[in-house]
Image (cartoon, rainbow, N blue to C red; front, side):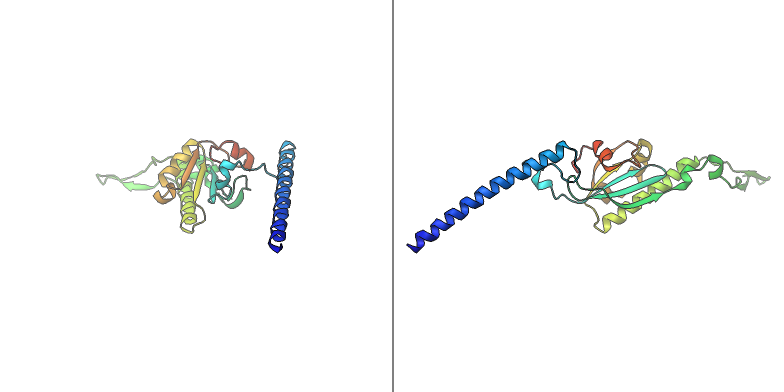
Length: 201
């Protein structure tokens, strides 16, 4: 008798739980739909069941850079905020040509030892400064990698500067790159950056 009573209570409890879960599921589904339709940023649409394993993804660094500025963001879940990690500025890249070469050409003896003459630089000052900044950006990425700050890396930069980054990034950090976008997006917001990515973040 007691056993039947306990079983009856368990059945009733299970039925109530099932009804509650059904109602709660419909409530949250409706709330997500309304929030999404109204463009609310406080409530993201539900992650499809096929992507549930990606909801808590590996921390991703998103880097937007050009020859004068680089912004580093951290994203730890799909649809999550772009949290600023660090920004770098390279003011030398914005200077005019004459300002980049303020020193007069150096002097050297000619091979015959007959006198001194001016040495003309064959290096484009702007290209040199872009290379310097690319190395600084790559060093920042390598520091973040060795500290375990990210597991994936996305880089967006103009084609020329992206090429410089490819030459300076460490092999270990390069293995963590999941996407590169050859576009200038420095200063854009998170949603504008997301529109240009194929990777789900």
